[in-house]
Length: 436
Image (cartoon, rainbow, N blue to C red; front, top):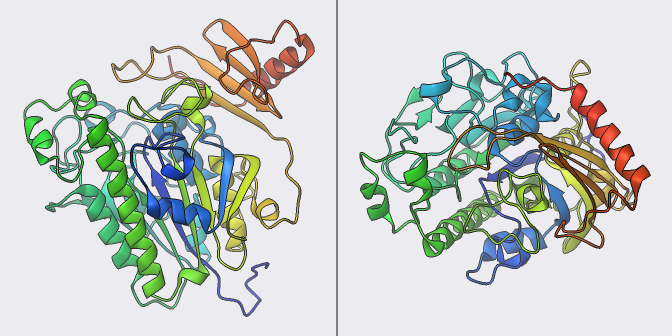
């Protein structure tokens, strides 16, 4: 099926659900055995599940920049905020420029009703906000994390907004985001819609729906270190189950509204998991360019277009999702800001074969107790080969035989190592430099 504005075919709605710090194996369909995620498992089974999906970065802000723009995050200064600090530290000194086209602004110009519900983390008021980057409406948080019950950031400041106005709600934040998303999709409208539902779950502080005592214990003690020390494996499981339950409610709402068959639903995570995550056989976690930091669950359901029960081995990355959404909605990208992402529809519709990709990552990080020590990391995946640079150390791995990235082959395969190093250096030279 090809969507064009001249066809008498209703253009599809789009729902993009982004989890926060959800690890590669944190859902039961991907190997989690300590708890079940039946709704996300069902979503995955109703479309295509990618076995080799990556985030554009091992932390949140740059991956979000990549999704919004369809480009590598380092092409913009905001993409070098790894991640963007809180409003008290960063102010409005950097953000996603309102003049830069986004998936939201492009879809809006193409007749879509657009909304972001959940986490933004791409710049602070007054210069930056979702409403200045193509979204008709916004309900969520500007910063990188908020308490699930008190809705404050790591400085203890309130961070829940409707449009560009601070608001107060009582309730568990995952449920509030879900309820607002359902209200949005159930509205009567004569145009298609695009909804980005960017949950804060399962980001720390790890507070399940029944863990209000954990939240209350943080009053007067809010901060990065105390938040990452809040919670247990059991409370983390509760956070993920709540996320799963919310997705189930949203999918049910699409059914009840009679629009499920004409709605693309995409689910992904912004980076690898944290200390309570199941990272499968991979090493590394959030903040590392090893597989555990950048491999993420990614599912796409598109009834009547994508066959169900697919597991696809195509290597993909976050900004491919952007290119795919634009293609599926017959929305042209801005030629002045060429996409780095690839339209996945020919692959997942069986019209084109799986093919090798060459993908890149760069990450320096910031000085913080909750992320790895600040050191420049880089990586290239080309086919089954992966080049990794950490500080002044370099490695070459073959992921087909060494998914744990334990066997350095740079001296056995010198030409491949040198080729990938050169490709990385060329790519890196095209990006915005890190500020000193």
